[in-house]
Image (tube, helix red, strand yellow):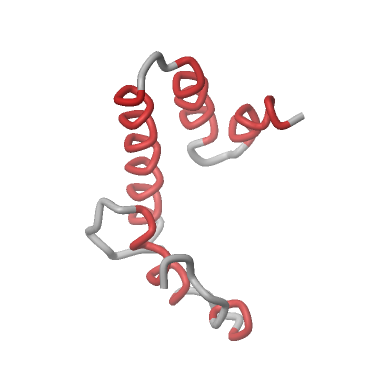
Length: 87
């Protein structure tokens, strides 16, 4: 079942089709450089969407840096206090 998991994003209403298409390219990439470029582009699309939706005001191009910004918008105290990766 895991070999088909890359197709799951296709069903997501925001960025789903774009990410699914890029994941197909990632899986068929012939070298590490091409794979890295695809992952960077996916991260960039996610960051742009987070900023567009007002969930992150960070200007960082490193996706993980947006975690604390997103977490600050969570209204439920117990969820907001959960650890963020990288901290």
